[in-house]
Length: 169
Image (cartoon, rainbow, N blue to C red; front, side, top):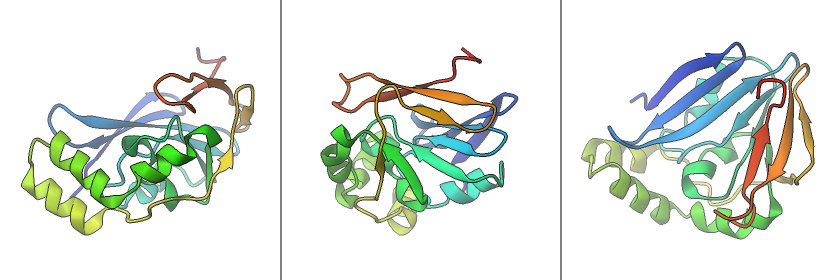
């Protein structure tokens, strides 16, 4: 089952949707620089194949950047070696990755799509945490020719972050 849809929205920017239902999807963004790529958020991790999907777009080294620790943002993070996130959301991330909690969200958001629910039970990444390096307000991510500024936006969660490409607006 392929649950990812990829749409190129700029020359080196891709919008990847992890489709949960007709009305619900998880937003994942891939920005490819001249030297590296940044994957922003990772969805629920339903299929365990996000990394393979991203590698069909780029062969450059991929670092993962998490906007906040909710389950629909951290689910596939463990599939990547380099993950960055605010340390303020570590507790939330650990709670969000509990398999039963993620499955409850899948049941709810899929509108009881039994095929997707069974698929998720069989394929979803089971990691209940991942190693990450802290990233903070004011940090800069240099992808080679593309710069992302890290902006703290606490509110939705204590560690919510935004990654701003000033050159692209």
